[in-house]
Each structure stands twice: as C-alpha cells, then as structure tokens.
Image (cartoon, rainbow over all chains, first blue to last red; front, side, top):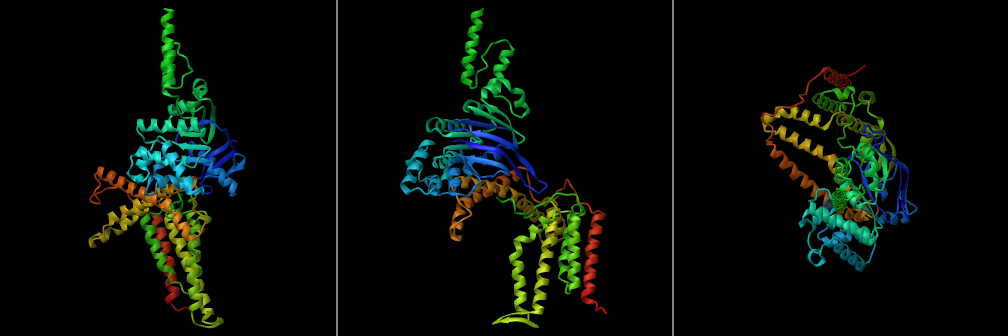
Length: 289
Length: 268
C-alpha cells in the first residue's frame, strides 16, 4: 500500500509577517518498492514535504494517507502507520543521546513496546546492517566515534524500527567520499535486500540519478517534474535548470561528446555506464573509418 | 511545535515605535514602569491603561501578539491578585475561617493585576518593536557611563547579543531533535510528570551537546577574526536620536507628571 498525498499545502508562520507557503497543492503517490529521489534547491520545500510523509507535520490543507490511514489522526492505528515510516534527518548523529551505542539503537524498538529479546535482536541486526561489529561497538559511547560512524549508528537507530518506508534527508551531507559511498551502499542494500521503499532527499543530482528509479523535482513548493531520471535528463533539461538544479556531470559529458560528433548513447546514468557507452561509440567510429 | 514561543521575538514593522532609537525606548520604558507604581486611584489606573493602549496602537502590532505576551504569565497575575484579595484587612464582604475578602482587598487585587498586565504589555512592546541587535546596542550605550565603575558594558552586550542570536537557532534545533526522536517513537506529551521528565532526556542530551559544540565553534570563529572585546571598536550603524525619540520621551514624561500630580497634589 502506498503513501498518498492529496492536494497537500503547508504554511509556516500563519498570521505573522514571516508567513511562507512552503507547499502548494502537492499531489503525490509513493508506491511500495520505489526508490524515489527528491531534488530541489535550498528552500524549495523538499524537507517540508518529506516531514509530511510520516506525520511529523500535518498539512494546512489536504490529506496524507499511509496505507489508507490518515497520518494526521491521533488513533493507535495512525500511530502504528507513522512508525512504519522511518525518518533519517539531516545530520542524524546530532540526535544520539545514550551512554552506549546499543542502548541508543534500542531506543526506537523499545518505544515500539517490543520484548527485551526482540529489542536485542533488532539492535544486532541493525548494527550488522550498517557494518558495525556488535562485540566491538555495542558498549562503547556513541560520542567517541568518527562522524561517519556516528551517522551509521543514527541510521541503525532508524533501521531497527523495521520501517516499510525509509526517508533520508541529505544522508551524505558533511561526509568524505568514502563515508558517502559507504552510506549509499547501505541504502541501496536496504532497498534491494529488505525491499524497503526509500525516499532520498538530496542536492546532489549524481547521487540520486544512479540510485533512484523515480525522480521528483521540487521548486517553489510545487512538483515540477516527476519521472524516470534518464527521461528527465534527456528530455527536460530546460525545466530542470529553471528549477535551479542541473543534470549530473555524466549527462553533461555525454552531451558535450555528442555535440562534438561522437555518437554516444544518451541512455547513461552512472560513470560506469558512460565509460561503456563511450567505448562502444569509439569502436563504432573506428569501424566506420 | 514550538512556534508559539515569543521570547525576544522581534516583529518587523515601520511604526512610530519601530523608528524610535533603542536607547530612547529603553529609557522611556523604564520611566513608564516606575510611573505605573505611582498610580493609586481608579482615575490614575485608567490613565495608565489608556496610555498603554495608545502605545500599543502606535506600534501597529496585531492585538493577538500583544495578548500572547501576557498569556504565559496569567498564573502570576492571578496569584498576585489572590494574595491581595484574601489578605487585605478592611470592610469584610465575605468570610470563611481564616479566609476573608474585603472591599479594599478586591480593589487592591484588581489594581495589582492591572499594574502587572500594563507592565508586561509595555515592556513586551520594547522587545517586539526593537530588533535584538539594536536592543543590545542600546543597552551597551546606556551602560557605557558605568564602565568607570568597572561594568564591562561591551562584554555584557556581546553576551546578550550572542544569547539572543542563538534563541531561534536552539529552538530550531530543539524542533528538529524532537521530530527525530518522535520518528523513533519518543513521546513528549503524554504520561505522568516524572515520566515526561524522563522522556525529555533524549531531547536534552543532544541539545546540550549541540549547544556546547556551537559555543565552541563560535569562540574559535571569533578568535580567528581577532575579536578582543570593546576597545576602540567602531560600528557600521551608529544610533541616532531623532524627533521620534524626543516626542516619545516627552509623551512618557507627560503621563509621569500627570500621575505625580494625581498622587501628591491634593485635589479639591
């Protein structure tokens, strides 16, 4: 069952001079099994949008339903549904608070009311998933870790809730390339192996384009583009740029080569694809000679 | 979640009060607060009330906002009123055991409550119409003469500026951490008082850590820019006294004189 946003609008600071309409009549369905990338420049409304997906913000007008249940309700059922949507905020390591890593990860499962054994099993599984050895790290303080490790602990804290949907807001911000790659690999695994529906918010078109199978571009509180990344990069470049985002560097390179007369396929999204496509194109050119 | 907190919240505008110099506004507020305590009769309180209302109208702030500044303090207002109502001796109109209500008590209680309400409204106008930066600038200028007695005026003002500057940042941070923990099933709003206090731990620990981290970063950033206190610093925006300030101060002085007359000059 999907998360459905029906004509959702959200206003910050109503009745003050700081009034800002952050979302304007958003209609959106997030289907199970999707890997959705949401992109938009700062202040476009993307963070506001994702906070509606698990009921942290309630629409000023309109409705959000998770698996058919209104997320704004205060019933037990709605609460359960909201727990099915895990949310990893920007700089999630800033939310760590417990004395040990295991205790911190256990915070979520404990709140779900699971038994001690189940909680322990969840913690082990989540730590294993983000690549932190249980024996080594379980009893350490989370504040002794490096930034990348802290972030993995924080993500484990959300994964331990066993969400059906996982929302990540700029999960790679402030990490070095190694850390980024690690985090992204974990997210790809979550989607591929656990079948979790992922919603990834990012500034970085390259990251989104190689992972997501659906791309949503937000500008000025409205959905400007929605479709397969490759289609958007190939056909909607103008619209992308007017929304303040750019195609990934790989697409730019391909475009450049095509302009110069090398018939590289446009169907590339990752660096690896591009290498192969350029190789093929070069062979063809040589053949023709 | 926390958008209804209004501590030091500046409300931008272009009214008479907004245009006044912060120094003049601080001085005027102080004079008026003292003047409120001169009021003793119903006539005097009516005048004070009218003057307060007139100033609110001058500020062109929404009434709701002004009301919001009084609302959180209603317990204190009711308590003050209660103490006066129940403890003032005089003509009894109701008595039960050691509790008694006298006519004088009722009057004193209402006066005290009115006094508090006017006081809160008037001083909240100062923070509503003055941006925090201008406010601390004003305080620094007013404290400057006391440097002779070893009052570190600039440092005090800088500390206030920084504290005020970080209120919205910390509120934002609190909001974010609350949301993050709420998505992990934390519950900040239900349960007994003890349980709720315990539930605050996942919020307070990260908040303290981030506050210390920010303080540290700020200190390094200031040092890296060779900040070293108040000696010989100049400002980009100098404060200037304009005719608004003379009119404003004069207005407050007039009401003060009227109140003085009402109190000390026997009429009739």
